[in-house]
Amino acid sequence: MTRPETSKKIDDTAAVWAARIDRGPLSTRENSELDRWLTADPRHFGAFAKAQAVQVHMERARALGPHFDPECFADSGADSWITRRRTIILGTAALAAGAAGAVIISRMFFDGQNRAFATEMGETRAVPLEDGSVITLNTASQLVVSYTSRRRRVKLIQGEGLFDVAKDPQRPFIVEAGAASVHAVGTSFAVLLLPQKPMTVVVREGVVELDPESARPPLRLPANMRAIVPAQAPIRAMAISPQEVDRELIWREGRISFEGNSLSEAAESFARYSDTRIVFADPSVANRRITGLFVANDPVGFCRAVALSLGLHVQIGEKQVELSR
Image (tube, rainbow, N blue to C red; front, side, top):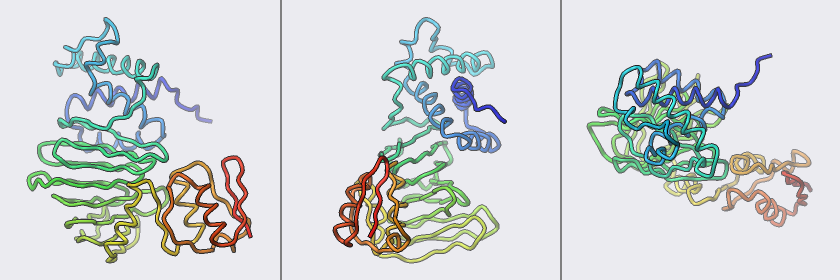
């Protein structure tokens, strides 16, 4: 039986990656290795974000004590790289030890290095970027941003993001997620990537190019289009109304919109925002349909409203709400 990684081991590895990124852009192979490490364990992403936060807030890091030497970050030699790595480890430990350890970063500066962003369950966050673009992250989402002089690259590891892209014809904006990537110059689109589900793209404004990793040809998607991208099946693209686009993006306001969805589908949606689960006494209840606008992180309030509307009984337990006839 494989022993789980210790927190120290994870922090050390995160510090190595952060120090490597500080030296310059990663190669394609290194980016793949970093992606695999980040997705291998949920703790990896948090450790990586903390290590990145230490680099961004170097002035705060002076409080770490006499071992901290900011000049070591000016030299790109091997010895300096080791010193940077040790500094990041010290900074990560100090951040984790006190209130300063909360990695809540609403503004980051990009200089060709990777930057990691994440949201907790039930949290949404707007992340303004240096070029005027804005990423809005939905609940339980993780991504890494890398800006260079040639391109703006975002790796969506999990969750959902709305990308309002500032126009820059010289630097395309690329979002990689699951089995495809989305290319844009200046537009607004959302990407959803959930476990065991195909990637979904919704275009709100402009035009994007959807490029599958397989041999399938790229697909241009104009505004008011949705595309579902299975890993090993044809892309399903369909036109949707502007009102439906707005409903799909209502999560930015902390709400969920249902339009004739089954209660089982609603329960699955609420599970993304709260650890209080909605369960059903029998399948006939789960198949009932609901339409309405609800607070995303309030499954109890949703069940009470549903019970009143559909003549059901609601029973509230510990981290669980049951609907029955």
